[in-house]
Amino acid sequence: MLALYQMTISSKPLFLTFLFFGCGLFSLDAQILKKPIPDKLVILTFDDAPASHYSVVAPLLKQYGFEGTFFVCEFPPNSKDNTLYMNWRQIQALDQLGFEIGNHTHTHANVSKLTQEEFDAQLAYVEHKSDSLEIQTITNFAYPGYGLNEKALKYLKERNYHFARAGGSRAYDPLTDHPYLIPSWATEESNKTEIIQALEQAKNGQIVVLTIHGVPDIEHPWVNTPIDLFQEYLDYLKEHDFQVISMRGLEEYVDFEQAMIQLSPDYSKKLTN
Ligand SMILES: [Zn+2]
Image 1 (spheres, rainbow, N blue to C red):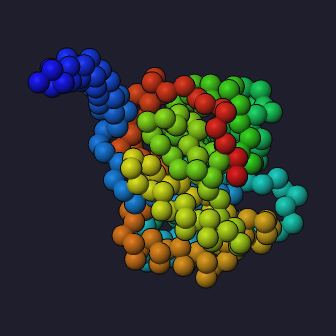
Image 2: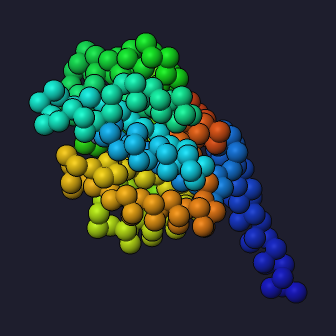
Image 3: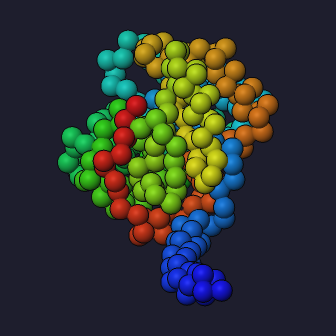
């Protein structure tokens, strides 16, 4: 009897503690998240505008009913062959097919090394080009070469970007990762096991974001994804009932403005691939 009495009083503070922190956690969830993150939510992003994004990737995504974000840039004109990259009419066609076009700077610049004026010019070039082709307004960004710093985040905010993708080879947790430091895994020829294991982490509120370069990537063989391998990933996602969305599709779940208020950028986490 005495034991029961002791248990009752000693469990009181514990209960109150739970109530206090439990409610705190709930309100945080309620503000950053517009609705719960379902398991098996994956975001596919495609970088650098190689021609294969138009000729191979877009038709395959359509075939599987998947969405995706194409982070486009123009490489400097010394590129060995311009036909290896999409032209702006092809980028416009991706938009018209319903895919998202995102900003990857004008010249694939390392934004951590730019002044605000230079960064603005890099962003504005892609924004204006898209605007002149009536491509849906660009709201999302991906850091070329994963180069970033505190100043870059400040400049992105001033230009009203919603989300920005980095690297890091880890899952994205909208309740802890700042919306300008969204981590991703990058696919390459030899990391199929790593990517499949990554996809398994799309659960318990975590989202998996993949960065995919050319399919195939002729100019950047170190980030090449062969067509067969890409199709294996699409089959895997389909067979295992994953929901495949674009970066802008995130807005259905995440209130980026609230996330920006509540979360401070954590540069100690891994952000490059
Ligand atoms: Zn890139």
